[in-house]
Length: 106
Image (cartoon, rainbow, N blue to C red; front, side, top):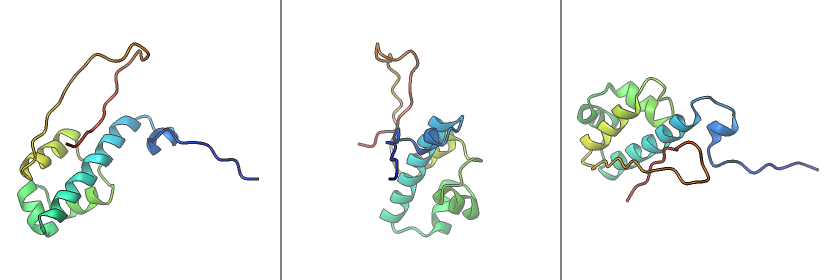
């Protein structure tokens, strides 16, 4: 019989990575950047010019290789693609001692 364990919703956390929350946020941002690029029918060359990053770096980011790209740069990419970015800071719930970071698209 195969034992199945339910995941946390963050594969990086499940793998025990120290920067799991940051990697999850970057994953979501990279996916959304790719979605906007496809929606606008941009080539990677055109998108890289708009975003101000080299095409090979954009290609890597869209394939999940974003360790060298900061969250701030990815948020800037969203702005350059015509998307508004809003950051909201709130008190954590009473059941958690620490806060968490999430990305929500409207």
